[in-house]
Length: 246
Image (tube, rainbow, N blue to C red; front, side):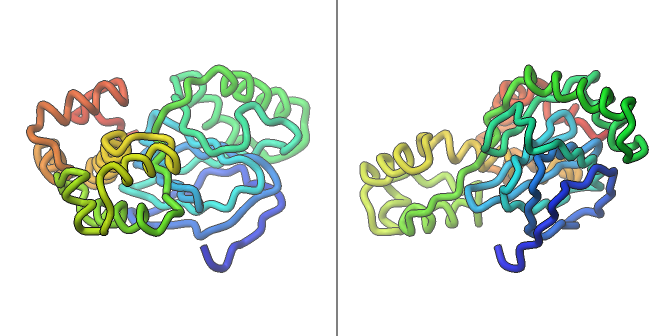
């Protein structure tokens, strides 16, 4: 990521981004919670990408270089947290956001930015809630190995590509056994798991752009709308037709 901007203090504010809008690569000395009250948010680092719909937030640890991109009309709530308090570890993470945590984040990002005891108390409550928020497996890792990166780029260009790993291997010059081993050792997941994550991320983007569910299923490689709906419900806890648009 070129032209990395350094912001010592992670901003706490509400910001709106138009569809396709972006915040370029930067890093903070503080931690940050990034929550999309409306639209779908993508956060990208050198290690991969995280995509969160309106009932998820993304934890960005201090020092991690990251960039934001909006899909759909994005209402972005940025909540800076002191680097001395680390409730969630050193890796970006997608978190479930229930109604209470959502309102706490919104209230904190709208409150006057001062050092008052009231503001400190308002910050302490969401931090406590974040410690117990379920972490979601919505990370799509980016491979460092050139062979695996080439294969993943093929699928990123066309998530609906239904080629087997053996067929993809013939295109990049490796056996399916070698590629399967690389997925597990380098990315910590199987090839089917990685492809499903890719398709779910792409589906979230298309839904934010108001694509019909049946069209999303087709463009993301599912054999039918019902198969897509089943995977989506098991992952996000609701159907794509009721996808949050707050």
